[in-house]
Length: 440
Image 1 (cartoon, rainbow, N blue to C red):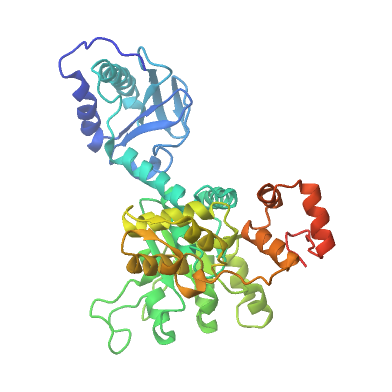
Image 2 (image 1 turned 90 degrees about the horizontal axis):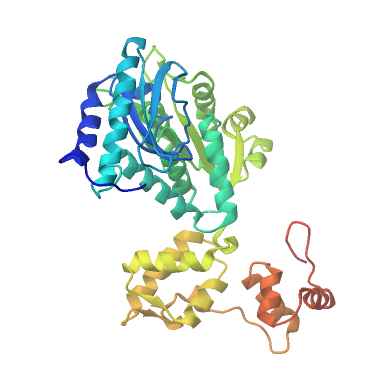
């Protein structure tokens, strides 16, 4: 945005004052860049419930100069001297539309004054700061792994339309972290995120924990009753971890909640409406559990609008970067990995995934005296490199392939040969590449 000489004393502060004045009004103020991405939004309390989900920073929105968007009157003004930025004011009432146009023109000029005064073009504001924090959550979950990015993009599109999501993956792959990031990036981010570990709650308590209870529902009940985790998640996201361990008797009640979007607390007669996004997770084969009669088929299809599988740590394309990131988090950036230790960490299969990795890093940090992690500081299961007998050409090649997670181009580069030569060597040694990426 082009800067000009300041026009009015302290004009740079007036934009924040205008936005604050609109807090109690029936109006919404937002600023967009040339591409239509919302940079800043300030929504009056009287409109908050109607438009907050669609007008948060980071969303794309391109109104005309003066038009009605859905049920709102909108007036947009280009910022003088800017590179395509604009300011828009929305109002619900047609009587307020002329005032919205005047406010849009005033706000556009105030934004220009901010730029001319050599201050931030837009105030940071809680909305923009929260949006940046949510983007940070996505980066922490996905790293630079393409499969994880595809998973999160898919989950965001599904959650926007209320489709229930079932996460699968080995233990420790970060299913709850993924679900929490999905919540923070969804239109429900201002609502609660309620996580329930179905395997950790005693069977005798899980019904009251999930569905809540009224006063006097049973002996020992809390005097004021209990809302239950489902009602606590109203307006937000309910995360049901280890859903495969839910008792069969309670599965019918959960199915009723998901179908009718209402819950009846224990000891109550009146159903309470509930609006939430449901994300479930399991490391079990739920389809096999359905065939064995341990899990209701109708509940499975109600929970599994889409099945998303999270890759284990050993299959993450950004595994080395993840190793370094976990070390930096656990050591506050002080410790480093010796090259030999990094090779051992990278070659380990990590059956416990991120939980095992964090524990291994904590052990190494406790044993090192100079903040340099060496092989002798690693747990025995990690420090023990795969044994390959002398002259075992097949074992050595297979270990290299596994170490590179079957990225044959990377293996060929490491060995200094062409992919064609690598394929011929694999064929000679009986290492077969299956269609799904496995081997024989």
